[in-house]
Length: 432
Image 1: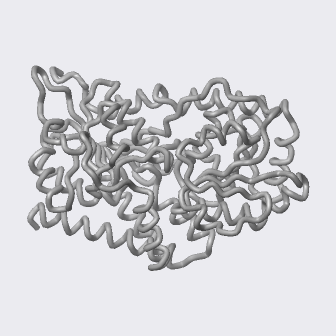
Image 2: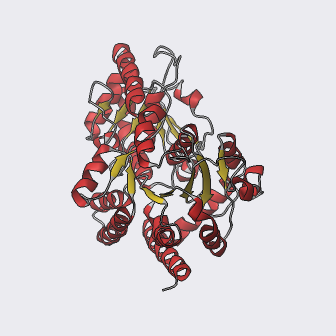
Image 3: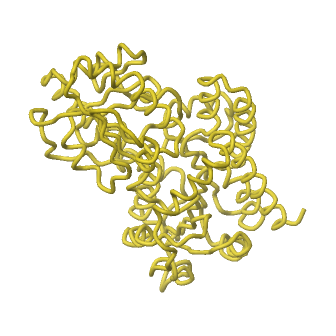
């Protein structure tokens, strides 16, 4: 099969599989609402300085050109809207800091507006190529110049990796899993006793592991997922490149804080399940113990999901800057009952000195010790009791706040990721 024809076939196959998963989770109406909601949240597709300058950004400058890295993801990162975007932007900025020239290609071909400008301000060149045909031709022409190509998510790699192996055999191919999709889908299927989703997750597993095999290096966000792939694919080179946060200084103490906070977008099924559990079970039980307690829900689309909140529930929807909320509430909650990867909502709270009450699922991959870095509880009664205890114990609040920030410094900063990223890439020195 000609290489470009195979690229388009694989791209279509991957999209059909993702569509089957989306339809199963949301139905046609829910899928349409998600697309419409994302469109409402996006800027008009107007080219920016970063978007229109892609030809210049991929050409060698005067003298020795820096070693260039190409990063391909579904869309331009929007760090104020989801944790994965925050990680993506900070990883690219770290590569620039390490001395690489970094180009970013959004697969959806949509100009990123001020999000693309923010990447450009970090020294990242945004390559705007709309349309699958144009992107394939662009890759054929430009991909051989890259020392490494990082593809985020297995379903993009399914189309891109075979093409790159043919046209850029010297480029190092890195699969950034973001999280192991098949693990998250399998856990959701088990949680809901959903046989159809179980079959779909098995297909995802086959596809995702095939891309792990195809990559020169695979990035995962947690030691747990690294260990899982070590069992499944012992020959694969798998490195942990987790979330990147910077601990905030000067966070207010517990004295004037009140309320609890959940952060998470409505497009992610684990978040919807967590909100449902909060509203139907956990928060009503908390209010029986603490009648004045307020629950703050922050995340894109939550204001359209929770249309008539109960007393004490404040639905914020999308909040561009969460800092004021993080500095006002008493604690954060992450009652996730399924999922995969490392939970950015927990990282975010801890980096701001906000103590967290989380489930075992939400704690996975975060190096948390119950009672030392956070409170971990899986049953409704234990979760409610943990929230009540942390709302009334200032000494525990201070201890968990400090321990959470210390943990962030050790495991979830750019410095913590630096060695794994550098070891994955060729030397930034073009003379080597």
